[in-house]
Image (cartoon, rainbow, N blue to C red):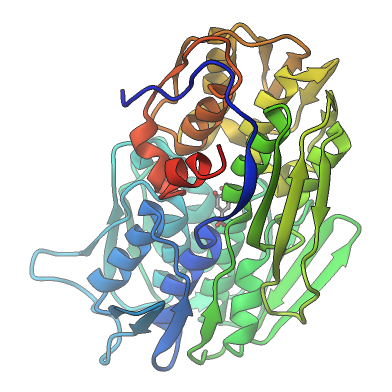
Length: 434
Ligand code: S3P
C-alpha cells in the first residue's frame, strides 16, 4: 500500500496539463521497428513501464534502442532476429504487458527460430489462446500452458494467409494476425464485428504495407498482403486513456475547468470524451484534422457540470474498454442508473476489473453491482472515505485515486505503485491542477 490518495473534498481542478505519450502507439513503434529496413525514430515515446517492456523485448531480440533527446532511435538487428540461444529458445520478458506479448507473437510467428515469451506472474494469468489460435491456423507452432496462458513458446515458420473472424474484440490480436499476414503466403483478412483501435493499420501503412480497410457500419475488415516494410519516423501524441483519467477528475470535482493539451484524437480512442458529454459534462475537443494515416492530436477542455446516468452496450465497448472503470466512478455521481453491458473483456485485463471496480466503489459507499459482462451503478450519492484495493491494476489504482478527491474523509488505495505501468507522472500531473 502506498500513501494516502484522497483527502476531504479536494479543491477544483484548474489549469492546463499534458499527459505522457500514447501507450498503444509507443508499443507498436518499438515492436514494428524490428520489421523496418533501417533506423526508425519515435518522438515522445511513452516512459510507461509497459512500453519500456516493449523496448526491453526489442533489445532481447537483438535490436538497438537509444534515447537521443526527445527521440528514440531504433535499429533492427543487422543479421536478422536471433533464432535460438545456447540454452534453447530466445527468452523475451514481457513484464506485465499483454500488448507486448500478443503483438510480438505475431511478429515472431513468421521468423525462423524458437522464442519463449514470459513475464510477471500477473501477465501469466491472462488469456493467450486468442492469439495462439489464429497464428497456429497460419502455420506457426505456438505452445501455451494448460489453460491457455503464457509462458508462450513460438516456433516461427512458413505461414499462409487466413481469414480471421474475431471472436473477441481485441486490437492486440488483430495486430498480431496482420503482422503474421505480412510474412505469409497470400492475403490475410481480419474481420471484426465492432472495429477496434487502428494504430497498427496506421503505422503499417506509413511503413509501406499493402493494406486495405473497409468499414460497414461498426464492422471492420482489414486485408494485408505479404511484403517488406520500411523504417519510419513518427511523433506520439498524448495518451487519450491517460487524458481520460484527468478528464474524469475534472468532471467529478465541483467547479473544475481543465484543458489537456496534445491528446491523441484518433477517432477509435476518443469515445470516452463523447460519453462524458453524454453524461452532462461540458467537453470541447479541438483536434486539428490530419490526413490518414497520421495520428492526430488536439486539446480537450472539460468543465464540471451535473451528471446523469447512461447505458453503454457492446457496440461502444471496444472504443471505451480502458476507460470503463472511470465511467463506473463517474456513475456514482450521476443522477439515475448507469449500466454497462457487453464488457466481459474487463474480467481478463490486468485484474478482473468488474469485480475490482465494484468492490472498490462499494468500499466507498457506492450503490454498485457486478453483472456477468459489466456493472450497474445507482448514482447521485456522496462517497465516504475507505480502503480500495486496485488488485495491482494501474487503471483501477488511478480510478480510486481520483475517487479520493470527492470522498468525505481520506481514501486509501492499495496498489498505487502500479500506476506508472501506463501513466508515469500521474500524481504530479493531477497535483499540478489542484
Ligand atoms: C490495446 C488494446 C486493448 C487495450 C489495451 C491496449 C492495444 O486490449 O485494453 O490497453 O494497444 O492494442 P485488447 O486488445 O485485449 O482489447
